[in-house]
Image (cartoon, rainbow, N blue to C red; front, side, top):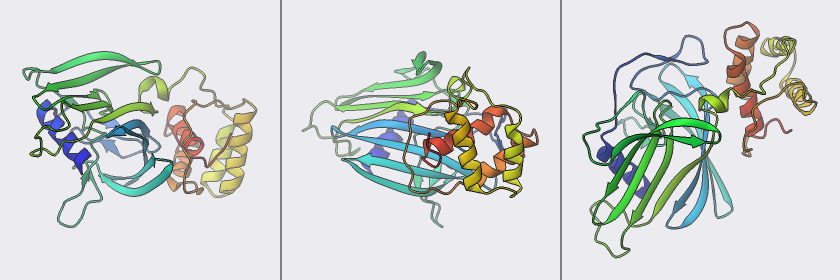
Length: 292
């Protein structure tokens, strides 16, 4: 709960809000990201190197299929002290809460901000800057705050709403900061994602057109999951099909999600682009379902 309070306080300090604007199209036909909502695609993932009270861990958020137009499944995997945990959740794209109950309460997924992001530059410490991330140049909305008890800085990618970093350093372990419950140094640093433009559309993306036949047969049930997975695995190993390299994350499930098959069918019929289809294949490799 301390981490959640940290995020909430920093966002309130930042004055980061959302405004109306153009819709952002998803890779899923007939479903759009609405202005003021969180915008994610099936297969998107974000991975952080984190520290809480100087203890390191890795956290990965992987977004799955849409549920209606306003919700999406999200898997949160953590590796802490050599122990792996995973939770499967439902995220409300409008409210930004997951694990919601009937009374509307839940947990805010504050590693994602609604878009478009609007900032109040009249607030001290608020700025906008460009920085490099794994070969991509991203525009970051940054908020730095220096109080008697702590220094902190938080940054979000302006285009996608992805949290890029959060650094909170208490100035004294004995400081009286019980009112906001910030006792331990906390860090979140983005280390991997497929959500930025350059990471999702690399120059070595190559998919032979005849692979669409396999995707079509699989989506129609003419070949099984294992046959499709083996075929993709062979093509990647032989260099016939090239996809973006991602940091592999082991998965607790080896079943191919239904949205990947649906996307394959859409790709075969020309409803989505090569890059959108590759996100599904990239997810299968990243989650360990297809090993190369």
